[in-house]
Length: 327
Ligand SMILES: Nc1nc2c(ncn2[C@@H]2O[C@H](COP(=O)(O)OP(=O)(O)OP(=O)(O)O)[C@@H](O)[C@H]2O)c(=O)[nH]1
Image (cartoon, rainbow, N blue to C red; front, side, top):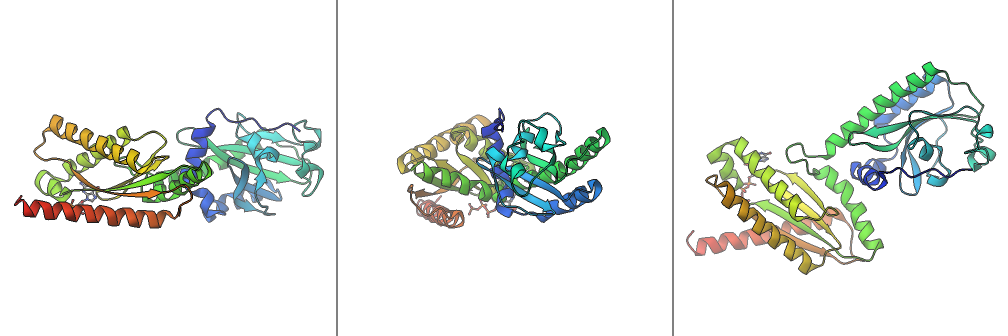
């Protein structure tokens, strides 16, 4: 048996897979229509859409005999994602990669496999659309082409999910994308025994920008804020737009003091941008901060609620101060 190779873009691939949140919704009925169609068109006992994660391969949809996660080292689909084009195994017992694979030598005794890699925009191959039979089969060039067409339909569904997790205006993760990606990042911190911090931002008097300068200028201000936020964060941190003028950032392996430094850097960068742009208004923000110790509560909804509450408290304190100063 030969172990599957690791894709060259593995880290990015896993990041994309986790950020889409597909693994959290297994099995996913959006894909069932396509696996049912594949099963019927090819007359195979099993058709699946699989996702190749770090250690295991999961079925996002399965028509026919369902199975639990498969260790990645034993999975046919882990081979399919590093194969150019359809991976075709007409008789597993004659294939040096699979002849002694336990899924071939023991139940369910796979004899035939065809898997087309599934790629999302950006180039990450997340898994495969695969056909399985318990008898050897011949698979014509026409069959290969049909499997490719069906895989393209699955890819379209995946791309739609990807679009649903990214905020179109700022290209940061949207709430759904952030809530899907953050728990994975927090788990990583817990495993590495590192702290994490969540920042919750809300722009101040943003409505006035819309009212005084128009919605398009409001959009521009949101983009400037998102751009600046991205610049001051490390690439391993996770920024997102929760909606309206609310933004968040999950800082990985960042202590309270380090996180405070990031906020300072952001204030400086935004002030510099305000100075440089001189658009008749200033972008400014209130921020809430929540720390998560390495063994802390990794409930992202609760963290967001705490971050929001802390931001709100700070915004009110700031508003009270400005009233007292008569501004
Ligand atoms: N231009 C633009 N405006 C948006 C967008 N999404 C939400 N808004 C507007 O953002 C405004 C947010 O208003 P508020 O939450 O009251 O914010 P604010 O004026 O910053 O008030 P404070 O936070 O109390 O300072 C609303 O007027 C929304 O219509 C968007 O995508 N683009």
